[in-house]
Length: 204
Image 1 (cartoon, rainbow, N blue to C red):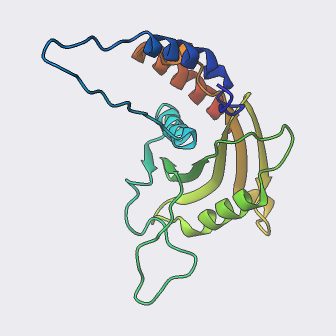
Image 2: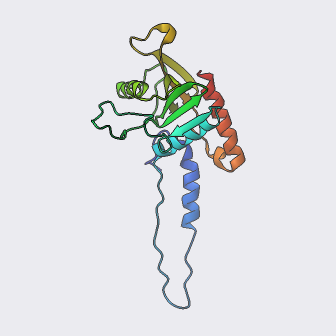
Image 3: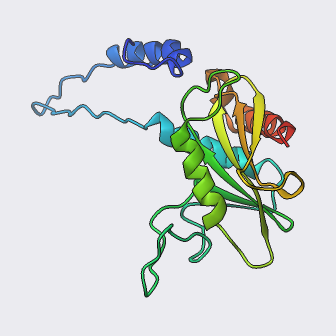
């Protein structure tokens, strides 16, 4: 299990047990001749899994609407530089969450955020761009949120040149990555989502 990242290490025991089960599975000989079997590897990128987890947490957090990249309508997001005639935006935030007349731009980041540290400059500029490029008539963008796996904590920064009383904020928050026992069935999974959503709401 040496190929597991530090964030994936809690799953080492479950994966070891799974490999043991697979190793004890044998193909019996067929009376009609040789039976061919092909090994299959199923791999899910953990960063993509984290994006799915964060989206489901947002759905449990009480927003009126949570739009992932596939469900964001044309025109909600524009590119930084627009051709004439305009084309469909080529990049979208992971999620656009709507509560009343407020919009929150939310991106999932599957990497460690050092306690007390600011997000990387790359992540800051990405969310700065989205804070200008996401717009919907009648709605107001209130801020951008980066969600990392880890022990629950939250920090925020005011966007440069914004007045303090009307500033948009960058919020960096963390929620726990699910443990193996929290994915055993739909009931415990929903409990995890509700708990993570409660941690998320504390950041606001």
